[in-house]
Image (cartoon, rainbow, N blue to C red):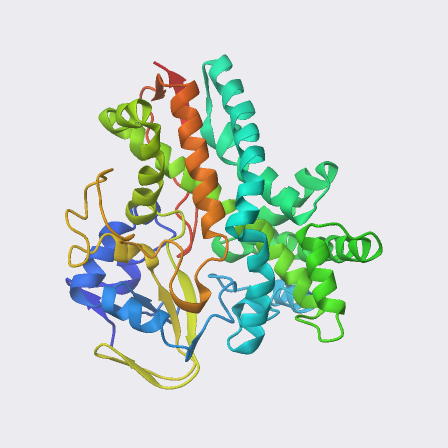
Length: 413
C-alpha cells in the first residue's frame, strides 16, 4: 500500500529533486504533519517524520541510531560503491555511535566549544567579520554567500582544526565533493569522479594527524591524534580522520547557510532589518528565529535497531527514518504564529535546529556566535543593505538535509 497525504503519494510531496521542494519544503512538512506524521517514502524506502511528538520520540529514543547519518540519499553505482567501500566513507564515526564511546568522544570535542574557548575565539571572529564586511561595504554590492557567509566560518573552523591556509581551497573542494555524494543526484560518471576524491581527501587528513603527532599544537587535529594514540584511546586513527572530515563540513557549511538565511529573511522585510540596525542586540534573536523558521539543517537520518512503534506507526528493525527537524519549528501546535518571522519571541528556543538529545550539535554555541557577529557587523557597517532588485531566491540541491541559497546578491540602497 502506498502512503498518501491529501490524495497525493508521499514520494511526490517529499521530492528533494524538485525545484518547488528545494525552494520551500515547509509546505510538504505541513501536509505530512497534518495527514501522515510518519510517512513511508517508497522511492527511498525511508520514513519521513514530520510530527512534533513523533520527532521528539525518535530523537530521545536510543534504539534509533545515527550511525548511518552521513550515508548518501541517492544510490551509488557498483563502480562508485567499490571505490567508497575502499575508503572510510561508510565508516561508523565515533560521534554517531551511542553509549560510553560517544560520551568520551563528545567530552573531548566539547573542550573546544566551552564558553571559555568561545570567549577566546570571539575577537578573531569579530576581526574576520569586520574585514570581510568592510570589503562588501566598499564595493557597494556583492554576494553575501561568497563574500561573507562562507569565508567567515570556514576560516574559523580551519584555524580551530589546524588546516594550513595554503591548503584550504583544496580542502574546500574535497569537502564540497564529499557532501555532493550525500545530497546531489549525480550521474554515473560524475558520481565515480566524486567518489575517487574521497580517499585522496582522507589521505590528506591522515597526513595532517601524523604531522600533529610529531609537532603538536593546541588545535583540534592535535587533540584528536593524542586521543587516538593515548594508552586508553578515545578513538582510532581512522575515526579521527572521519571526525576531522565531519568537523570541516559541520563547522562551516551549516553556519554559512544560517548567516545567509538570516540576512535573507531580514531583508525580505525591511522593517525587521531596520529594527536590527537600530538595535544590534536583536541580531541574536534574528539568528534564533531563522533556526526556527528557515534552518539551514532540515533533517537527519536515523535507523531503528529494533522493532518500535512511533505514534500510530509500527516500524521494523532496520527501518530508515528521515527526522525532519525543521518541521517542528513551523508546527502551529508548538509555536504561536508559526508562519511569521518575528524578532520578539520570548522563552526557550522553539526549534530543533541543532537536534535534540545526546546528539545535540556540539558546535551550536559557536554557530550562534558566528552568525550573530556577522549580522551585528553588517547592521553596523552596511545599514543601507538591500536585496538586489528583482532577486528571486534559488536553492541548491540539499536532499533531506540542507536548505541553502545558491546566492544572495546584495546592494547598498
